[in-house]
Length: 236
Image 1: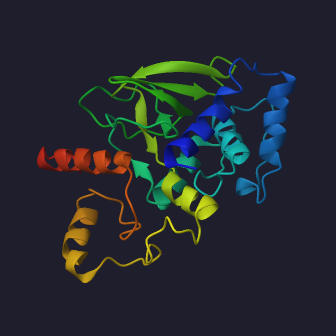
Image 2 (image 1 turned 135 degrees about the horizontal axis):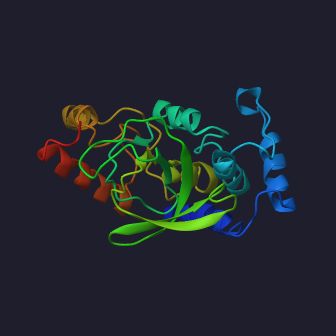
């Protein structure tokens, strides 16, 4: 499985539920699937009467077998904290997402030139990406699972959770295979790259993980984009 196929797997799980109405049998099934997660996040069981956007994301991750890279949660603020703790958070609101990224909102707290730092109140899964816009599949959108289209830099965007699909593919499909670099598990960069690596981490050009592993084209473009922001003084 490729990284793109892994991203597509999560997106397809989410798209399966489009049209599901709150209060329906399928909605109850989603709630039951979340409550069956062990350990149950914060030991807090969901009900059909509570907002369920984060619950929907968690269940899609569970169905795809990706709870190791997408933290289960029924609340958006707690899910954001878990992405941040894992070093998989993108604060820049005008970030151009990839399929499978997780987009968080804070309604009406942002403009095109001001970073949204409010409390996240809604979340969805990126299921399609275009030049200047992207599609989110969301639970609890108008009491249903719906697709919506957002422009890059939409004023409500709080930030993005970035599941580590590359690690997931490595650990679930290629562990010990010939496709892996011989020292891809080494957590330290080579000595000749150490200074540059520390600089890139400090300036948020890269997240500091997997220094000796292959990169995808998505990761290369993301690092180039972050370097551009660094040069423009916007990567803080």
